[in-house]
Length: 386
Image (tube, rainbow, N blue to C red):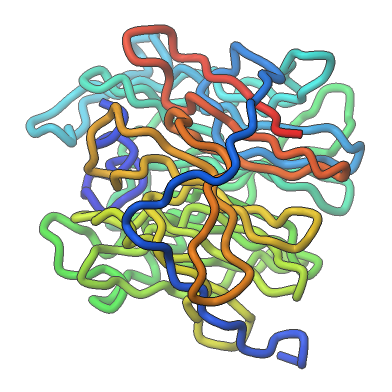
């Protein structure tokens, strides 16, 4: 995608019904100053993670991470694409994306050879963005920033981009297959002004699948650029669960999903340009109902999770918003249980964090340095808070 409202461009600008579904109270955000009241020390669970994105626990109890990879270097798989900085640039596809498993302080691939795209002008990398598990399989969202109006991919060598990849969980070879084309779905159901907003350069057919969670026997999928939450039924049919509205602060850009203790979906968004600090929201989505705002006052949300006490945790990519200085840190925030009370910063000073998961023992795992280290190598790390 090339428009600033899309997820890839947003990250670029920073890095370089039943009673159970009763209306939840609105949790407004804190004042502009949100001093930490609890500052635990993180420990590093693993380093050398290749462009980490979302985290998820598998049925075996292990932690898995989507690794966007490092793109490609083969000239035969490079094409000229419009640059987010103006003009054109070269985008190269490689088979460097993977799903990794954390064990004994290392992340080792269980599904490798997935497509990854690198851009020459910015070094930005897109590829596998999230993994979920269900019915003996794992399912992976594959980003796509080169969607054309007919849903095809400008990178003709990128057959997996914009699609879902499924593989049998635990199979020795982890052979994979492609499932519905999310980019084609977005092109067939273009956005309206209600979700697209009025920002310049936006395209109604944009798509960037960024998160997926098992939900009600199927899967819920966040398409960040289409501003949709999609539903993949057990039959394989794809449909919309919700479209998140644009506001004067920009598009919602939903990129984070989690299932709440009440069975509802909770959706976090980056918030597109102008991406004012504190303008990102968490939505509560119940199938068949309009999405409602659950909590406010965040900046550039990249992931959500509930802790073992039922409190919502919000991961912020950059507390200055997506147009803030690259040196501005991200953090992990605990949403106030009482409406009107300020949220709590659990972990400050994170660096472009991109993934969050809570273990059965209550340990909180964070994918940190998701966009690499300034002036250093691309790999990130997984940190743990116990």
